[in-house]
Structures are given as structure tokens and as C-alpha cells.
Length: 123
Image (cartoon, rainbow, N blue to C red; front, side, top):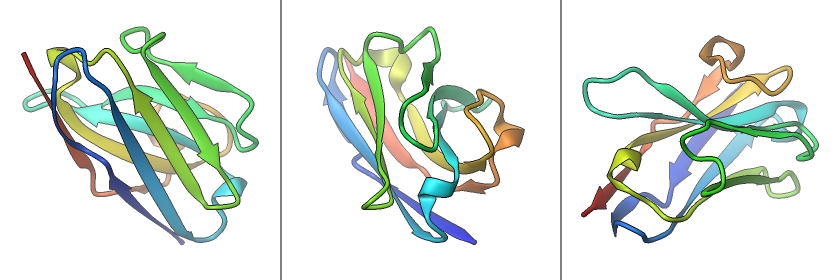
């Protein structure tokens, strides 16, 4: 069993930055790939970024590539998403996910999910 808690969301102006955190408890997060997904009102939950178990392999959605950076600290059982150059299209609830056997953009590859943290970008 893995419990995930996201934090760091809030209101930010366009062009600003925000850093999200995902704290894991239970089984060690180092066993799994981890990922960030997001969901805007009325839209499907979409892939944002994923990082491998050892933190070496990373993949990003085209919409965030070059602006967002995913990282993890296995000693602290924590994953991060550094978000820069935010725009209105980034407004969504951001979810942490864990449990995949490898990096994936597919929701079904992840077993555990956090409750989400709201990110709102004002223009």
C-alpha cells in the first residue's frame, strides 16, 4: 500500500513558477516509477510527466516540455514537479501517481493516486 499527498498548488500569475511536491508513505517509492497527471474542468485527466525508479529516465508531455521538470528524492520518498513559464492552459488539478513498473504516459500503468492539488494560473 502506498499513500500519496500532493502539495504546493495555488494561484500564480501567467509567466510565474510553482513547485509541486508528492509525499509518499507506506512502501518505498523507489520500487516504482512515478508520474504527474492533471485534469482541467470538463476535460479528461492527461499525462504530464513521469520519472523512472532510479530518477534517470524522464518523459514529458509535449505541452510542458522545456517548461516543467520532474524529479524525485527516493531517500525522502518524495517527487517534485517544477513548473516554469506557466500559462492559462496549465490550470488544472494536478495528481501524483505511483505503482508503474516503468515510465509510462498511460493512466492504467499506475496503481496509487493522490487526492490532487489545484493549480490556477491567472492572466
